[in-house]
Image 1 (cartoon, rainbow, N blue to C red):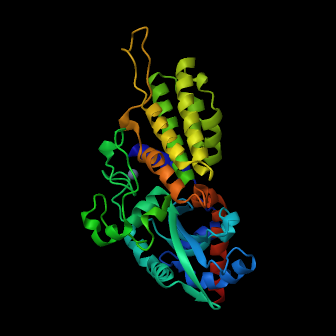
Image 2 (cartoon, rainbow, N blue to C red):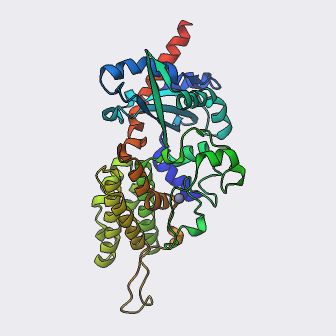
Image 3 (cartoon, rainbow, N blue to C red):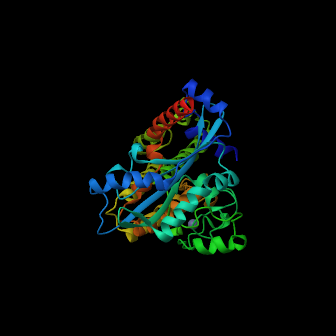
Amino acid sequence: MKGKDNLENVEFGEPDITNSDIIKEVTNTIGVGVLRSAKDILCYIIPHLLKEQVLDPSDPTIHLRVSGDGRNVGRKIKHVMVTFIILNHESKSHDADYHYTVALYPSTENYNTLKFILNPFLEELRSFKDDGLELNGILWKFELYFSSDWKFLAICLGLNSANSKYFCPWCMCSKNQLGDLNEDWNIEKNMDKISRNYININGHINPPLFSMIPMDNIIFDELHIFLRITDRLWGLVIAEIKEKNLFNDLTRKHTSLVGDDKETVTRFFNLQLLFRPSRANLIRKLWDGFYKLYCDIKNKTTDPVQLKKQALDWLSLFLTPSQGNSGDPNFLQGLYLPSQITPYIHVLVFHGWEFLKKHQRWGLKTFSYSAVEKKTITKYQHFFAKLLKMEAIL
Ligand SMILES: [Zn+2]
């Protein structure tokens, strides 16, 4: 598990919020959460969205996406934040101002607290789905979606954890089957079945919280997946050069890279600095293939069936076997082993194309949450500052 912790630190080691006043106030108010009614927020924003022609009364469907995560405030205090956006407002999907906060409370991400805190919000969502929302004579219907990083998703689904044998939120693939290229995996879980019968479904230990959102609409965050697989590919390279005692400052520096840097490294890093040309070319081919997969999955015009083939070809490349015996002059070193495939790789390869197919209208980029993390932090600080002022007045 140590490796995983290290990867977590790549993204989450630095405190997200460092304003010392806010940290102090948050420490003082531990135990106090903030909840806002999604209905109140909608009643406020729907008239604006109508005026801007983002919503169309002749097609009164609101596509509402829920997201959530845990983040650090200062060095020690973890907070959980749950937000929603209106997907109809496509041009604003990565604008933090259009992510509405419904819950914010000091805690680590855990099932029981989430269940307790989110109960009113979950009730609201259920009512949106079953009865819609009537406002000024228009009955709005709802299509609900959910997207978050793996950890938060696993908790909300009632999954054991990403390290359990049945790790996949969408299918029944087990850890032992990760490297089996003869298996084809599809989105096969059904939210109603999990809700009714979670105890008999491998990997599930709690009833899913967002049971009103169908499994097809529980969508991975493509940026999060990209970052984690980049970590994996880079980790495999580091392990190899460590074995050859080539470890140097260059590779050490990778641990401080964040999202944008990782994209640059994946695309342009000169692997010939570390390996002989034939080896460097093989690894470069794998990295380029991965980057192309990531770009294509974000592109709405990509043909999903083509993407599936491309993803499976890439997995075969990842698993390129060695040819001949090491030491022989004709020995050709392969790439990686089935045991080195991660759950993130499984999800990208087997489920990516299916999500693209089902959600081609929006494109998967719309479901990325990480993209707004940095901006959300600013909003988060304002939110707290405002909240604390309000309390001062009261
Ligand atoms: Zn799966």
